[in-house]
Image (cartoon, rainbow, N blue to C red):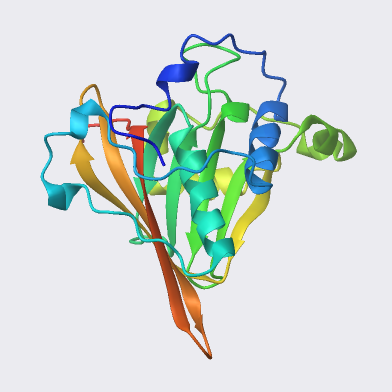
Length: 231
């Protein structure tokens, strides 16, 4: 659990970056997160949120099953370690809840390259949480027709709900299932920080079993949020 006043992003701002090679950086990040090697993300309360009301900083809900708790900690770590949350698309025109994240800014500073972006999707029908990121180099070589193509439109398109569907259908994008049996997923903005930062609460509910009923868990993450474009 992180302590008050600690921001996980501060420790790595000055660290040198290794060059990104296509989807290799993204693939490595996801592989590490899938095996549970990322540090658990619990309540993150930075100085920007210390004066928020107690209702804006609720305690996280701990899952009953250890595997479920590890899943939400992995998801929280993946989101909090991203450079920026570009958009949160709720279930309106689409049956999915989706987060568009900028994982890191390595290859071309200030520009979102395809290998640095990902869409995290929850499907209520399939009850899965999936990570849609660029294929790794060895995967692209096995399928020449799936080699990376250019970025879709302008960066402003990320704010459109249609962006996620277009991203998921790209031939150079691969789906990785992060979790299953997840009946519901919610993302709430519970507090505002300075310089575009926000405190998000990610909540998961797993489908009930015949004995113990549903299992629930939530996590709070401190993220940089991209402002919505004015219409």
